[in-house]
Length: 147
Image 1 (cartoon, rainbow, N blue to C red):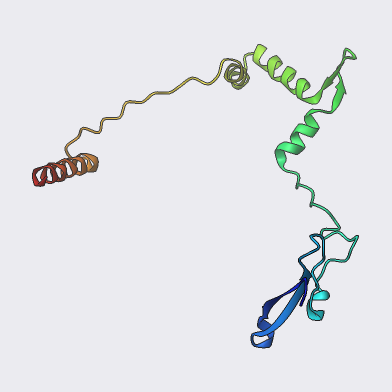
Image 2 (image 1 turned 180 degrees about the vertical axis):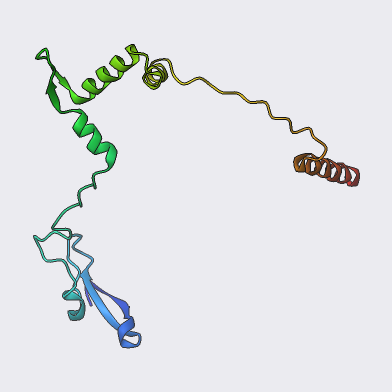
């Protein structure tokens, strides 16, 4: 066969009949020869496998809110600010009037939310965790005695 090599492929649609792909091993850039039945599935040269490209990301609520927040509005004084800044000015105005939610909102975002610690007593004899712990300690002691 000279510089040509035959490789057998199994075609599952034809009860394990063998098809051949022939390529030239002497030429590193040689193209593979496909069987006729497979040529209809080959990509056409110059055509993309994904002609429409990657689908656009769906818009979600935070994306929409951020876009709306970036829109520019004019204040009564004629200053240009974003809608996000305008809303925060409204929150500050309500806080100055004594609105508790607005005060808490500003404090949480400037100072951070406080940590809440809780003490939980698991030492009760009736607790399932205590009985499990006792059983576990008993089993560990038994295993230690065996070793």
